[in-house]
Each structure stands twice: as C-alpha cells, then as structure tokens.
Image (cartoon, rainbow, N blue to C red; front, side):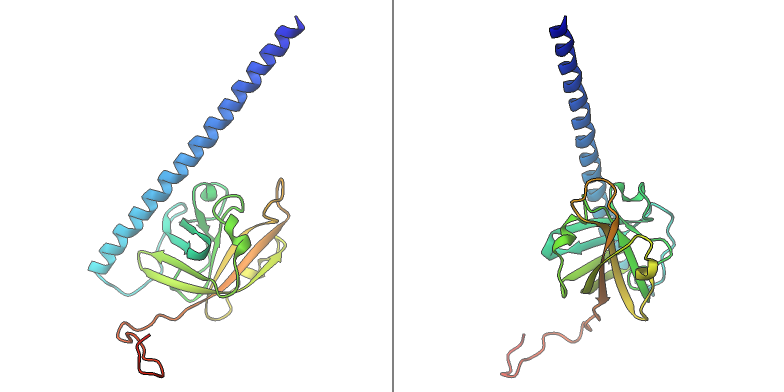
Length: 209
C-alpha cells in the first residue's frame, strides 16, 4: 500500500515537472518569436522613414506598442523595447517608462527590464560602454557615465539633467531569490551624431583614421 502511494506521488511530481518545463519552454519560444518580429518591424519602419524623411517628433504610442531596440554590443544585449514598464509589458521585452523622454528627444529616456532575463548582463557594464537605441526615427548612441544602486522609491533617477540622458533600470541584487529589494541604475549620456560630411579625419601624420 505504502509503495503504491509513493509510486503515484512520484508520477505526480514527474507530471508537474513536465508541465512546468513545458510552460518554461513555451515562454522562451514566445519571447524569441516576439523579438524576431520586433527586429523585422523596426527594420521595415526605418526603411519607410528613410524613404520619406521628416522632422523627428515625439512618437504617439499606446501601452505595449513597439518603441525600438536597445543594443549593448559588448555585453551581448539586443532586445526590443515596448511602451510601458509594468509586469505585462516586461514579459517579452524591455519597457520604456511612460512619461519619460523618447530616444532622440531632450530629457531622460528611462528603460526597464528584468534582472533575470534581458538585463542580467548589466551586472558587467562599465563606464564608457556604448548603448544604442534604434527606433523608426533613427539610431541614437549613449555612453555610460555611472552606475548606482538605489531604493525603489528613489525616483530622482528619472529626472532629466538638462541634456539627453538614458537611464536603465533593473532589480538588484542580480541573483537575489525572491523580490529584489533594490534597483540597479545605469546612467548614460547621448553621444553627438557625427555629420555625414565629416568623413574620416586625418591624424598628425596625414593618415586617415
């Protein structure tokens, strides 16, 4: 009798493990498909924008709409950004904090993502690392100025400094079990665009760099 109960308990645990594994795999596949579709959508929108250039204006987006892509080449980060930073928004992408600036606009662009998925590599970010934001309106580059650990109530990190800033937000510590008590902040400054006519600049010896 006891052996039969243990056997059924083992079967039950195995079935539960298979269900959880299937749910995890489905979530991974869904996220992968979302990211690939986002890449294609941004590429198509950029192509249309290039064909019909216009003055860069603040986009009008609803929650969940695609904002663009964020790339940090040195860390291997390449992820879509959607409008909104609630739990649902961050399920398959990074999220643009509603009410903060959009890429290419004056102010502070705030982007959040989970520490155990897309922003896990931020634990290795360093000052002077380059971050690219790619949107239908263009490509914008930012250089990391500093990192900081703050409490979730410290919303001062969202305030603009008077220029064009980028703030990345994720939970901290990175390997904390459960709801992490703090937030890891990355602040970066916009890198001015080089004029297309500038070309390659000669060095002191007259060679082009």
